[in-house]
Image 1: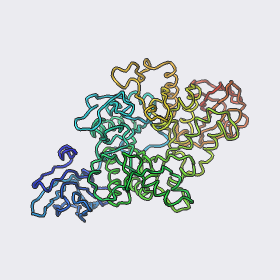
Image 2: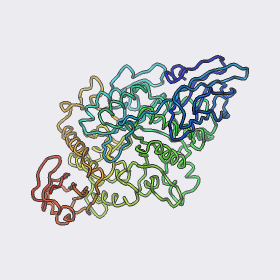
Image 3: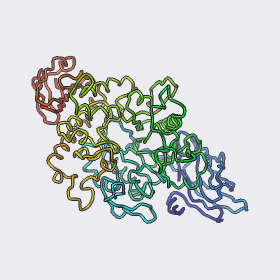
Image 4: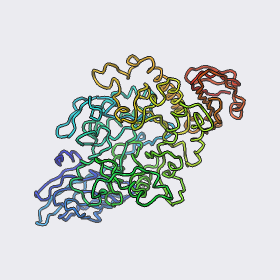
Length: 615
């Protein structure tokens, strides 16, 4: 465990008078006046701290309402009321031990920040780029290994830490901007001080500190500030369901029910369907929500009211302190569903412009919609979640391009998944993707076929939803999702001495440049295309290996043709006249080819055309 001086650094000053009143942690480390919910709950941890009486010096608009003593005498929870009239400043708490000795703690209340570029939210106008920081670029080799942290860097180890960090991302913001990226989603960057295999970030051991091997809190702040200056948003990956086995509180839980405990290791059944299934057994539902995600990831019990408040406050702290623009919530259905609804409601109450996408990895649009705001579920569950990861659409894309088109195969898969959009209140807010850190890379899924890769990219960037690109997809990186490290390889050129540097055109192969140029052309084009962000999607039943759809509004229309045939063909456009009949010309976005006659369009084999229609 870190010393108090390291953990608390500049946030507060602690004066320890008696050894038996030794305060080691205070979380959240500071707070703000002017939050919409007045109540603040401060968790204090230290040897025998629960035996203390606590008083607070008078401060305008702030009152200490209650001191909560949990079963564990090493914890206290202080409940404060912060009125709208409260002034920023330093609160002073006195902890008095049983023998009368005192410890004084200063706690900072900040004024809230409100620059115009802070906390923007994200939506269909964005192109999100997903980065696994440990595998993207090593900008500061000096932080690869940190004294006292359990795991050291070993780039040769598939499950080991490779040394990528936040500074590496900062150094390549020009690259990301030129690609057309408008938002970054980083896999979790909080401390994962685990003995092995924690490079992915999902085994959190400290909810208030960025892992020092990634650069720590101040480098995270620098990344966000520099991204905002460039018009790039930051989406933080959070985990409410579990923590890492070596989290600091795991050796000394404040309450026995802080986590779900069993007589022997009990794993979740991972069956998300049990939570919306009207026929599911209680046993299956309980196991889904209370079983551990893995042997190294204890399952948090959000029904404990102190933990629930802790997690909600932690989320608000990261938003307010660093100005993040959105959250991707890992394993969204695994925690207590009622808690997750409260959590999302509280976040969006405080930050109405914010957006949250929940990872709901399930194969049915109806069961995806169950978790979304606006769905009126028959069991009475009401969610507040604005966005989900659209796994049904993801699971249709590669087969759509690999199969011949039939009644419900090939390109018809895309048509049928989108035809179920009536289930969603706002399908345009679904996060859509070709691949991510958990699944087979898209280039591998379509057999590294350049035509199919381009078709997938064109579909991703023109259909409804918020497109997300996984790092390396823009250069056709490959990998089999059956072995996680295979889809989490280092980006070539991110480390000094790499034989190839794919961050530059000269370091990419001709094929990689072809993919990169195609994706970047479409991504940069769509930045200012409101018709793609908010226009209506009208699609036509796929026929003869061609799937045609339009994005259109009162003033504009874009025609997209996915042709998956093995031979070139001419597309007769008569059946699309309800939209195309209003226009006389078209220009293909990537090739810049002009179509003066829209009655017939030549389609190369395995190709995508994105045609701006013109009067």
